[in-house]
Length: 377
Image (cartoon, rainbow, N blue to C red; front, side, top):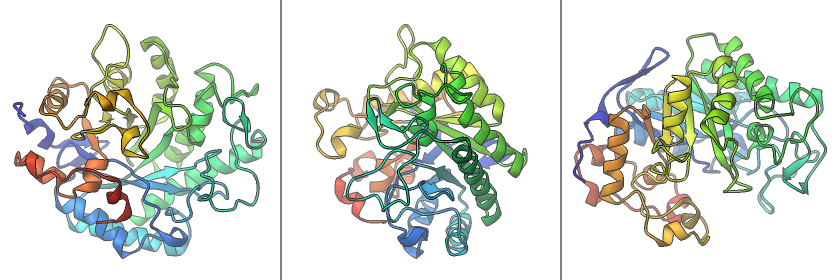
C-alpha cells in the first residue's frame, strides 16, 4: 500500500446529512432476527462498527410489510411494534457511538431458497411470474399486487424515519423484486410496467416517488442497483453508457439522492474504452453521489467466498486485498469517480476495519471466511 487513504477519512454530506468519512458498511443479510425482531446482539453488532469508525451503516435487507417479502425466516422487519421498538434501540446505539445508519428496504419477489424460505400463503410474486428466464414460479403481479408493494415500501420509509434512522436505501439490485421489473429476463409485461429498459423502471420510479412523498424532501434516500443478478451473474441491464443513462434518468428524477452501485469487483471497468466502474459512470451520467462496492480488501471473489463456486478471476488472485488494488481504490476516489466506499464481508469479519485502515494496519485485518457468517460479532 503506497497511496494515502486520507480522502477516505474526509467528511461527506448527503442531502443535509454529514458523514464523518467515506466508509459505508454494506448491507449483508444475517438471518439472525427471530420473528423479524432484531435483538440486543444485532444492536451490538451495528454499534461496534460505528464505534470503530464506519461513516455510514446500511442495515441488512429489512422486509417491508407484504406477505411475500422475505425469503429467510429470521430477517428483520420494518413493521410491527416489537420490530420497530427493537430497531429504535439499534439506532440509539449507533447514534450513541456518533454513527449514522440507513435502513435498507427489501422485497425478494420471486427469489426463494429451497429448505430455508418460510412457507408463503401463496406463490412468490414477480412481474411476470418468473424467477429467471424460462423458470416460472407463479403468476404475473396484478395492479393490486403492485399497489400493495408500493404501499409497503412507502410505509417502511415512514416507519424508518419515525424510529430514527438517518435515511433509507431501497434495494433494487441482485435480482430481487424491483430488479425483476428492471431485467428483461424476468419482466415480460405488456402494460405500463413492461416494455423497453426505460419503461421497465416504472415500478421502481413509483416506489421512489411514493417514499419521497411520505418522508419529505430532506430525508436521505439512495437506490441500490446492479447489472448482475443472483439468478445470473452475467446478466446486464445496460450494455452501453447511453443505455445506462436512459435507465438511470427516470430513477434519478423520481427523487433519490444517490446510487449504491453494486459490483463484484470495484476495480473492473463497466464499459469498453473507459476505466470508469459502474459507480463512476453513474455519477458521471446523473451528477448524483454514488457508492462503490465490490471485494474491497478481500483476496477472494464473491462467488468463491460463498460456497466454493469455480471462478477463474478468483483463481488468478485478482483480490482487492492486494496493495495494488487498495491503491487503485484510493486513486479512483481521489479523482472523484465516486463519493463513498462500501465494505461488506471485510467489515463483517473485522469490525475494526475502518480504524485499522486509517492507521495503516493492513497486516492486522482479519480475513473473511464462512465462519464469519455464523456470528454477529
